[in-house]
Length: 234
Image (cartoon, rainbow, N blue to C red; front, side):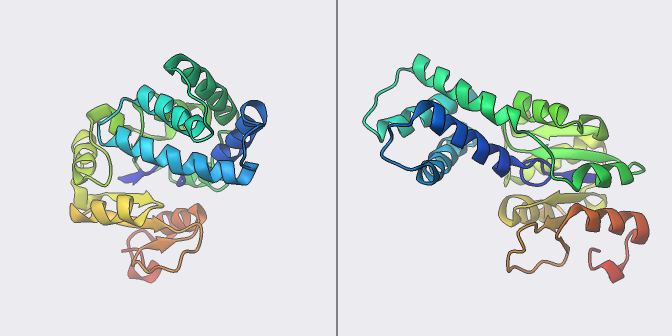
């Protein structure tokens, strides 16, 4: 069975986020002392802080939305109530959802892998991650979908990988996991004997036995070579 990460592996999260933050900046924070690029960097920094708190169970998914917007405005000297923060976040979210899409190589690869059982293991809120899969048109490719929000456990905790394998009724050693992040995807999945395949879209200067630069390489591997040392992915 082949499991996949979602954000930045199948779903072009950063492109959607960048466009949405710029739209939000234009609509809501034109009087900020920051320019649009600096505001985007601040949004990413603050967003990661509060989303990590959600993954650790310190905040609900809704609370992390509120607190990230409140912190961003607080840094400009503006205090927002929870209600106003929710309203502002909804403006961002509308822009974000309008820009959801897969990477261009995803649907051809998933279609070509139709003879394999496919699954998703992803951090994030259960409803939103499934909404992404549905809106970008790929949810029907997957027999098993596991999110951190489903079970209260997030990557890099190995328990989420173990849970997904049990749900799929598969031995971890018989499963592959494709992800873009070495620390939260590849290293932890390999601790339970899954075969991690690092999707290195940005050509980072790191080495791993099973590395691909795009989904076409993954497609060619499973279709044409199965499990062979020639591909370097065994």
